Length: 258
Image (cartoon, rainbow, N blue to C red; front, top):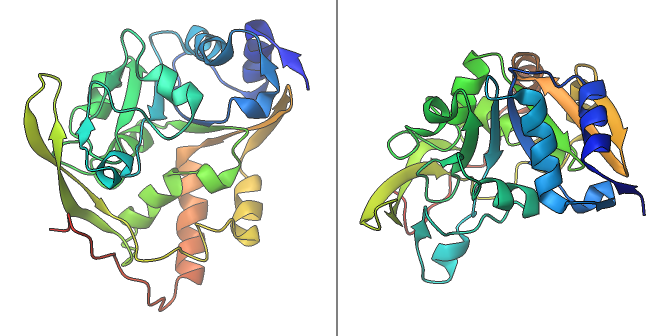
């Protein structure tokens, strides 16, 4: 197992193409690096020091319905994310804002943190008006740290923007607890009734197409991938229009469906 520290991470991130002032969405696996001295905090410190406060660091703090499956509700102050150690450490950091979305809340730090998280309660998790939509408009980037494209949430944003009929932008409404401890409600998207054979199962044609527009760097034991959202949108949208066809998969029917 490789051992790396913050400076190794910074050198790797810089070689990958991360720069000050970027708007950067990150999906991550801490264990993929090997052993990281300083753990998740070292990864976050490295990213924030490179981006500076003129940039914006965004991570999923999703729970994928975990609290609701246990008879609980999403509490913006305390509900952990199921996305791993790095994002669960990130949203708890001083200066990080968390969006109000019952299942797919985003967390953000930096220049555009307010802009990227403020509308999640009334808008959607991943479609029009979402944090990813605003990042896309700002020329943002996606960074995959040891996760590969199967964790590439950006493709769900493209699906919604391109009108994939298996997802509904605002299709479910859940009880939530806000930052003041008050119980209220918040909207989110409708997931599909079963897995998509294109985007959910690492389709090799999709992987190959994205590989043509990304940059890659090995950091420790982790393969790290960076790509621009605008180029990624073009590739994913083209892939969907070519392969979706008359797919019969529909949005799911759920106890919180509107």
